[in-house]
Amino acid sequence: MSHPSQLYELLKDHANSDATVTEFTLGLVWSACKAQSLGLAMSPGIPIRTLSWPGTLVGKPLRELVNWVTEWEPYKATVGMAAINCSLNRFELPAGITLLSAVDKGNLSVFEHFLPRLKDKKVIIIGRYPGIESYTYELNLTILERQPQADDLPDPAAEFLIPEADWVFITASSITNKTFPRLAELAKNATTVLMGPTLPWIPHWHEFGINYLAGVEVVDEDKLYQTASEGGGVRIFENGARYRIVELNPTNCMTWLKTRIAEDYTEKSQLTSAMEHWYSSGKRTRFPEFNQLHDVTTRLSRMDTSFKQLWDIHHGALA
Image 1 (cartoon, rainbow, N blue to C red):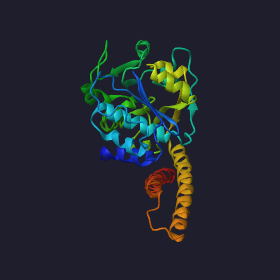
Image 2: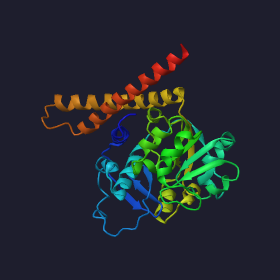
Image 3: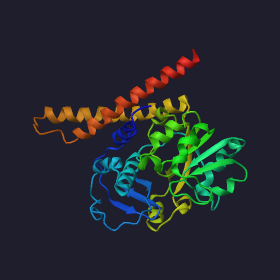
């Protein structure tokens, strides 16, 4: 198992940006961050009146807020996660299947998509999704939840049940609350789906044993932001968001990495040229976009390593 901090370093590397926050809402269900794009994260759902930073987020650079994802205080971690998704959503999403939601069932469209493959399988779902109980009559289904309802089982059951599962659906809010690394390790022998609007689109999930991503694509930023601000939960799937499924097979992962590497290589070349011009013109102060150049260089190094690992695995399997 890689060190649990590896994921969070990857997230920060990919999401670092000097863009400034223009709007932020801590909604009843979803928190939303706006800068050059919009990103969501599930809100903690814990009433609190003593946060020290409300009124200070707008105008801050995303670079500062994405670091909050490693905080243990749940609201700060949520701000960090929303800022990460805000930054990442400026990139083109990987190729996949867009799910067109049925009315009132948008939040369950991922389960509808996989339903034929779940018959006669032992299925674990991390996190309770409104309406998920409708599948308990046709599936061998167990729901694990931090705040159990009805027949849900509590968190500690994960250690006992996930290693025996055939399919595991992991809520992306587990990234925010820091349980994801352990859940992914427990599910290493299962087919895994990492899902939810909190999902950050980085091309490294295969490194953590994830087989499918089910994140959201934003189709109407203004409507989505308004819905989150007004307490919308499942209604976000009727107002600006829809699920996209991406299978993380080697071919898809390498294609995604190649696309992102090409984008970042172009950006690095432009920044390097600009820096050379900056200093050749006699300026002695620090190149103003040095941080951006450092960020893109770090991302390229990480993606190159990931691509080479996939290449070796894929071509070794074909040999």
